[in-house]
Image (cartoon, rainbow, N blue to C red; front, side):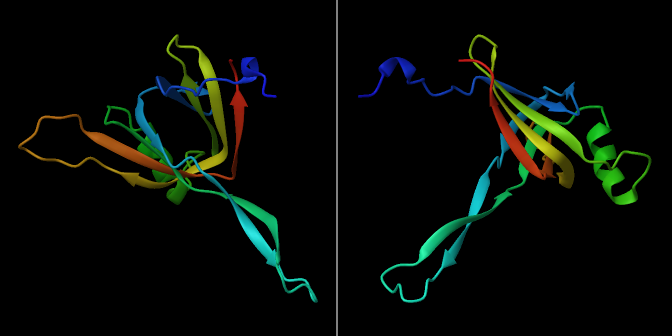
Length: 152
């Protein structure tokens, strides 16, 4: 029998923040691509013709894309540029945390991206017919991620 007291409600995406190398960067408005995939290794055993064994292989991660309104800071562009030019330590890998908050502004989940670095920066699209927020996006590759449930 299922203990209904242990079943938790699904998290509601009320708000989120981004920390880059431990520094809060809460101005991002969208985060997409947080995904893990496990390769399947198929093993065909000799003499066993009715099925093949499917075994878990390596885990891979898709790139994550962060979107924000274009601000006055060049920090993201300097990071992108530093990956190519290797100026100072601008191009180093950084640990990123994506933090989900509930409606009471309490942290409930944290995804820690280990060894992240930018692989694509997309600048704003301009249209004179509209007066809307100008966005930039940053696509990150990373080595692995961990998930923490921080509140119930």
